[in-house]
Amino acid sequence: MNIVFLSPHFPPHMRRFCMRLRDLGATVMGLADESYDRLHPELRAALAEYYRVDDMHRYGDLVRAIGWFTHRHGKIDRIESLNEHWLESDARLRTDFNVPGITTAEIDRIKRKSMMKRVFERAGIATARGRVCRTPAATRRFIAEVGYPVIAKPDIGVGAARTYRLEDEADLAAYLAEKPPVDFIVEEAVDGVLLTYDGLVDRDGRVVFDTTLTYGTSVLDVVRGGDMTYWIPREIPADLRELGRRTVAAFDVRERPFHFEYFQRPDGTYVALEVNMRQPGGLTVDMWNYANEIDFYRAWAEVVVRGTTEVVTERAFACLWAGRKDGKAYRLSHGAALARAGDRLLFHSRVEPVFAAAIGDDGYVLRGPELAELQAIAADIQALAEPDSPSARVTEPAAS
Image (cartoon, rainbow, N blue to C red; front, side, top):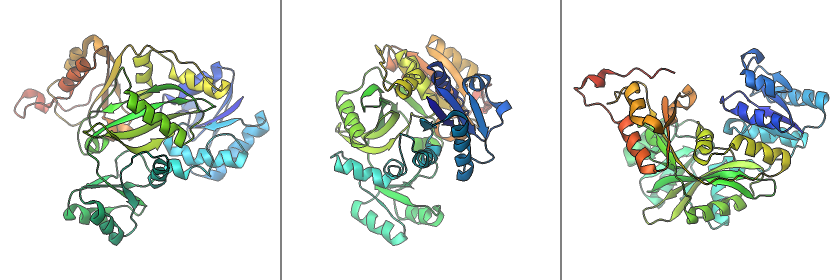
């Protein structure tokens, strides 16, 4: 099986997907803008061939690379990146080279939040009212319909770097004055807890692994200066699983990992936020592995190469991410935070700068049978120092 993997070096854990494909006998070819000599040795060993381009955004260069791989190895069976940033490039290349998977005809409904809403609505899944508002007048008309507060964010995009929460006319005026010149969708704000239904679907559309995340802090609040906490509980609520599988069917997900986001309102009902046709970011895949004692990288590779996989898990542990940001004064030093975590600490990690705004510059990954214990440890790790205490002056980042 000939598989081209775009950007196999970044984020760094992507190499493990390539390694598992190689282990299953696939011919894996890498395509990226990084020097071959700078690739991780494990990635170099997993790749049968590597094609470097100067700029991954030059589509013609990507076409030439796929043409070269085809010349060298024959028909390409899959083109993948598992990366939101390259999702449209993946789809365009699949379309042009007649490769199975998401194509350009399907891309809008999984990239544009406005199109996702249409799919949710047709499937009878509740979603926040929202509209792409291209003019100040259209924005004001929508707010008049739903009332403040509202959320404004790019119709295409992930994270919360350019997301606005508008509480009143002053917020609206500031947003209209500074918003970037791209399509923004404006939505009614939904009160509730942000959680997910995540997993892996095989070639026939069967969910072969599922899990969930709960965010203790919203990404928008983290971008505004808060500290990220999110966790994988041991159990998936039955109603969330049912809703998630309806979403899988509505979007006809096949041979892919997925990451669906919902708000759970105070009355227990759910409101769909968005879908992502890839695994969550950061080190979440590794957290899945630790929480469930599985190898998700291999499970995905088996789905690609063999069509399906069997994932057996007893869900023995909860797993939690606690993030801290450089430049903030915490009550516990890095060393004291490690000591507080004790044997519940799986590892500490410095975060790639491109992801730090969303999840923190430092991440402490905790695992244990009781979620409440992990949450208490996280609260201590993230507690800020009193203004007059000595630790209030300790703001240097942890060593990597």
